[in-house]
Image 1 (cartoon, rainbow, N blue to C red):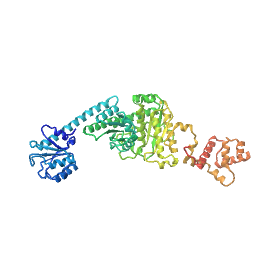
Image 2: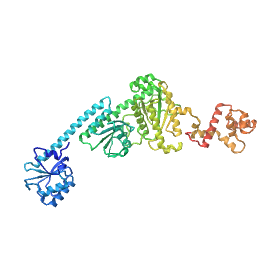
Image 3: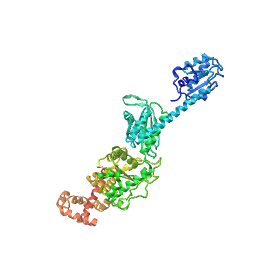
Image 4: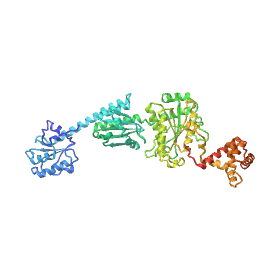
Amino acid sequence: MPPTLASLVHHSALKLGVLAGEDRLDTPVRWAHVSELADPVPYMNGGELLLITAMKLDAEDPEAMRRYVRRLVGAGVVGLGFAVGVNYEQVPDALVTAAREAHLPLLEVPRRTPFIAISKAVSAAIAADQYRAVTAGFEAQRELTRAAMGAEGPAALIARLAAHLDGWAALYDASGAVVAAAPDWAARRAARLTADVERLRARPAPASAVLGGDTGEAGEETADRVELQSLGTGRRARGVLAVGTAAPLGTAERYAVHSAVALLTLTTERSRALQEAEQRLGAAVLRMLLAGQPDHARAVAGQLYGGLLDAPFRMLVAEAAPGSGAAASQTVDDGALDAAAVATAPPGQPSNPVTGQAPGGVPAADAAPDPLGTLADTLETAAARTGEAVLVVPDGERLIVLAPDGGAAVAACVEHAAAVDAKRGTATRPRDRASATAPGDDLVIGLSAPAGPIGAAAAYRQAEQALSVARRRGRVLVEHEEVAAGSVLPLLADDAVRAFADGMLRALYEHDATGRGDLVASLRAWLSRHGQWDAAAADLGVHRHTLRYRMRRVEEILGRSLDDPDVRMELWLALKATTAGATGPSLDS
């Protein structure tokens, strides 16, 4: 600890006496300063022991001494040393009385003790304290490093850090959840800082914040001082470290915190080269799966992704709208999927090569929000908590993920999609949601049915089909089971489909507008009765010969034969599409 007035008084070589302020001797001394000015206050920083001989002071004037002492106390001077045997044989009573009234420690300095000796003693004590702090900091760094390298990893590091600080410490993951805290009670304290952690995570790393005391549960006041430090070197923080202490951190404690931040950053922020290698490996595994080579994929995956391929998994395809943060921040290198993998995309769908992120692809700090990056962090964090394997492959403006069926990553994806959907506002009409979407929320996700390695290509098609439906319906997430178990009719509520239907039936509507018959209604009735003349005529309230005449007119006007099943199918879907356009149902229904 730094030198105090008490340590100077007990210094055997200085022979200092105490005349006032005996109850304030435990005050730390930042420096010893000599000044014979009548008003030295402008040159004080606070925390000094002021040494004087009273050459320019009327030390026997009680009122002058009261003013002098009050000025010193107001400037933060912690003590006054008066040398006797120079201008005064003993400390004047006026000064002693003024010091006692102001509770300012007053030390008598004997003539044989030079001021330089006191200054040297203070300087030596400060240097020794700094050396102890540095030594303690290095020792803390060694202990924290051993803890980080142990089996318990970050949890042991957090426990050792809390012990060094004589306070508490907590570690938050990339999603803002508390993953380690010490002592045990600190988990509840850390949970109350979630909002502050979220604000810090929104800032480019590294970032920090200091929080004062607040009011906890049941109204008790928590006067601890909390420091938050983000972990990571990229735009998005990979975690946050929180430390709580009763007082501001000293030098040794600051060394320990800095060491913990560095070690935790190393464990949470993998090197860019390793990230690139893992992403390329993931792209290779996915390429082999889509090419129908599950055995080769298992061999390449090894222990990194091997467990993922031994049980049913889900294929997830996520996409960000063009111009979003993901579109601006993702980069594509030359390691694209080969033609065999790209050929698995459904006809009419653009083929996006699955690649790893190129070196230098880290987005700038001022880039737009990255919905794909946020989704990837969410899935990887959820998987890490349960120890499940997950394969995440960036793909330009897309993200392709393989995750265990029924696992934490799939559940986190569903929850994340629900949160984004709620943020958009469910009251917004689906076709207007694109304009209502806030930056960073322009995300659509397609989720396949459970599949095995041999069915990876089919799962990819299912995920893309679900993605297309999600985009069409203005939804964040659509699962393939939902599409397969639903109706095809909502898919007809599309501008392109309606345009096709309007063009196909326009001649019939124009004919009916002249009042020469009701061909559209007759066609709908006849198709709904599968071409049964009597039943359809009865529905219309006309003779079956009248209905036969109308169907011949339909064939003549359209120039197509109703005996062709493809024609009947197209006409029926066109009728359903125009009906949907007239009534304007919700696409989510």
